[in-house]
Amino acid sequence: MQELLLAKVESAAQAAKVSALAGQTATVTKVSAVTNLATITPSAAGQAPIIVKLDAARQVGEMQALVGKTVMIGKTPATIG
Image 1 (cartoon, rainbow, N blue to C red):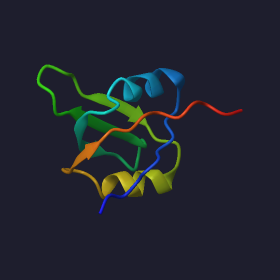
Image 2 (image 1 turned 120 degrees about the vertical axis):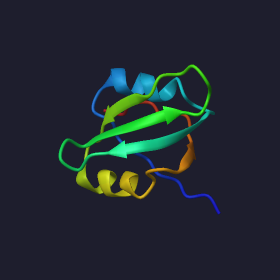
Image 3 (image 1 turned 90 degrees about the vertical axis):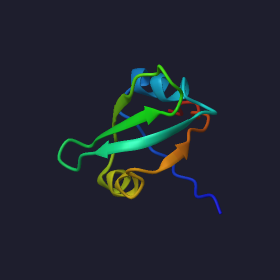
Image 4 (image 1 turned 60 degrees about the vertical axis):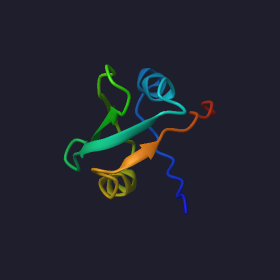
């Protein structure tokens, strides 16, 4: 069973970094509750890890549960508002 997690990132630049990984797998390597920063390391060779700032403490908790796990990055939805 797959679980969907939608995480809001801080800026359009960060959303673009995540969007560039759409359709690829990555590992959540680190999540900090102090800074709300998450590090995502693409599975493909030669791609650098990306660091994104999460919008809320709830998202930090959800992402912390994924540390060390491989996840599929989905398409980034368009910004609304």
